Each structure stands twice: as structure tokens, then as C-alpha cells.
Amino acid sequence: MNSMQVIIDPFSGPCPGVQRALRMVERELDDYGHAVALGQVIHNAVEINRLQAKGLVTVDQADAPSPIGDTVREQRVFVRSHGISDVYRRSLQKNHVTLVDGTCPTVAAIQKKIRRYDAEGFQILIVGKKGHPEVVGLAGCGGREAMVLQDEADVEQLDANGSYYLAAQTTISPEVFSRIIELVKERVKDVVIDDTTCRHVTRRHEKIRNFARQVDVLLLVGGKNSSNTAVLYRVAHAVNPQTIWIESVSELSPEMFSAASIIGITGSASTPMGQLEDVKKVVETNMTIEQEK
Ligand code: SF4
Image 1: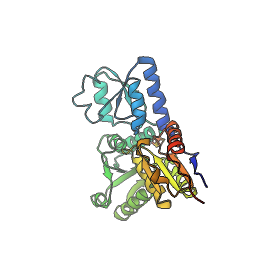
Image 2: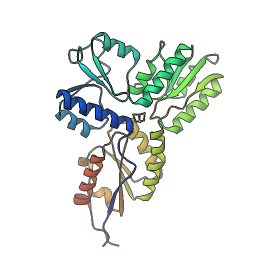
Image 3: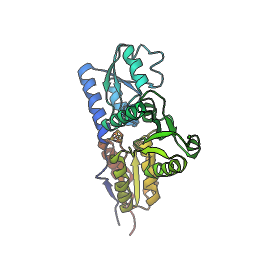
Image 4: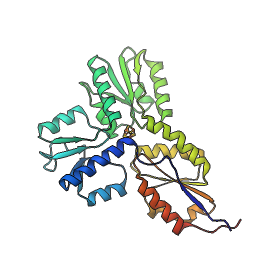
């Protein structure tokens, strides 16, 4: 008989920006007994439920500025790691909102560069997913709205004689970024290309690839609304087709592991280590099928 081995990816756990945001929210909850956040602090339903039980209220970031609802007006309001646009920030401040700014320092640095290049007259380009909160925030920094390049059709809209500064959504995959910048370089001459993808995220790609190769089945734990989890899923699945993306332990079933000797558990930039430990416990206690050698 041969029993399964269950291992947690040693390089998993939330990224520094999300860890920082969570620490700030926990401090708000400890100090005030409640906290209002603009949009989900972390793309992870289990963690959101835990914070809600401690007093966290999440308001829709898109709806808050116009008109400013009573939940937000004159309140302390938490800005998550994705950051917000300058227009939005001013609108909140005009309504006497005290911002508790959890914008990831990496994102804040990109926003600063965008303002500088915008002031110098460059049209700002963001390679990223349209509507993603970080992209919306980046696109709204500086005086003029940035253009978001999600695919080839967007690149075709560029004026060949324009002057551009191009940055990236921090969690965009390196492959997508490379493909878009090649197209941009073919189309325009005057473009400053700034690879602003998050180093933490890009390093994770190589690490998750290595981990995925070492296991028979890989469980990737992360929110179904998390861009970062979606990218990590594609990266891991490309080297190990037995990669399964789950949001919670309720999605597990013994059949997933019927042919597995080594099961790996990993998470995205928004998956706390505690959740990976919980998944490990459930797999070890409820999912293990003794296998014939
Ligand atoms: S992925 Fe990178 S840029 Fe985004 S919040 Fe985490 S550390 Fe910051």
C-alpha cells in the first residue's frame, strides 16, 4: 500500500502589498471596532468572511464617488492595495472622507511616474485588463485619462506620431506584456516602455512552475475573482495539467486524487497561509485513498 504525501508550496502566501493592507485593516478593526473598505481588501472569499465577522464593511468602489453614499461620507475609509485614481481621491476628500491608504507602495510608485510623464506631455498607456481596479486607478492618475491596451485591437488605435509612456498592470503575465509591447514598438516610434509588472509576481511564476513539476496533483487555492490566481493557474497548468483551482475546501472530492502520490498545495498573492493549512488538513483526513503499489 502507498499513502499520499501532501505538501504546501514553501513560496506561497500573500504578497507584501496584500499583507500590508491586511495588517492596516486589522489595525482599523482593533482600534475602531469596524472599518469601511472601498472594494474587496483581498480577492479571497474566506478571508473576507473572517474580516466581515470582525466588523469590516465593503462598499463598491465604482459606486462610491458619485454620489458619495452615507456609508462613506465623513467616514474613515480604507483604500485597498490596488489604489484609486486621482479624480476619485479628490472626490472622496471633498466629501470629508478620511482615507486610510493601503495602496501598495509598488502601485503608488507607478502612479507617481504616470503623473510625471503625463505632466511632461506624454499620452499614458497601461497594458492591462480593462476594468481591473488597479488599472482604473492607474489610468486615472494625471490630468488626462490613460489608454488601456488589453489586446491587438487597442494597439491599432494608437497614433503612429504620438509620444507615449507605457506601463503595465502589476499582475499582468510577462507573455501578454511582451506581446503587446512588440506590437506597440511596431506601430509607434516615440514610446518610453516601463516594465512595471510586480517582481514578486513574476518571481512567483518560476517558483510555481517548479513546484507544479514536483507533484502529481496541484491544488491552487484562490478567489475566482482574482486576476493573479487566474494567471498563476495558467502558468501552473501549462507544466502540470493536473492543476486544480479551488476557492474553498468544499470543492474537494477524493476522485481528484485517485491517481496521485504527491499532492501539492499552493496559493495566489491573496491566499493566506492559514487557508493552505486548512486545505492540507482536509486532504489528509478526508481525501486520502490508500493506493495499491
Ligand atoms: S502583487 Fe505586487 S504590486 Fe500588487 S499588491 Fe502585491 S506586492 Fe503590490
